[in-house]
Amino acid sequence: MEYFLTCPSPCNYEIKVEANSDDEAVEKIMQAGAAHKNEAHSDMKISEEQMRSMVRSNMKKAGCACMAKKNP
Ligand SMILES: [Zn+2]
Image 1 (cartoon, helix red, strand yellow):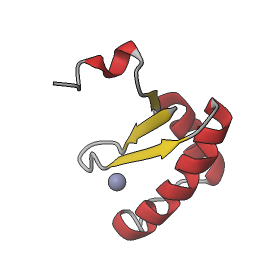
Image 2 (cartoon, protein in one colour; image 1 turned 180 degrees about the vertical axis):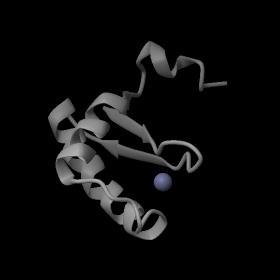
Image 3 (tube, helix red, strand yellow; image 1 turned 45 degrees about the horizontal axis):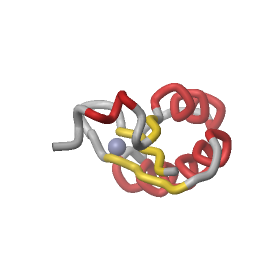
């Protein structure tokens, strides 16, 4: 399954990972997000725990109805 996380505005960078479960997706997005955060948001003060709960509440599953509008 594919999972997406869109970085909060005004960045709107999209992180996309392939995972078999929500937990796995959170871990993968955390890893991918860490690299992006260092590049784009090096001054952002957020703990790993805050980042994890942000990822968990904001990530979206591909194929879910919430993504349908994004597909042309
Ligand atoms: Zn960003």
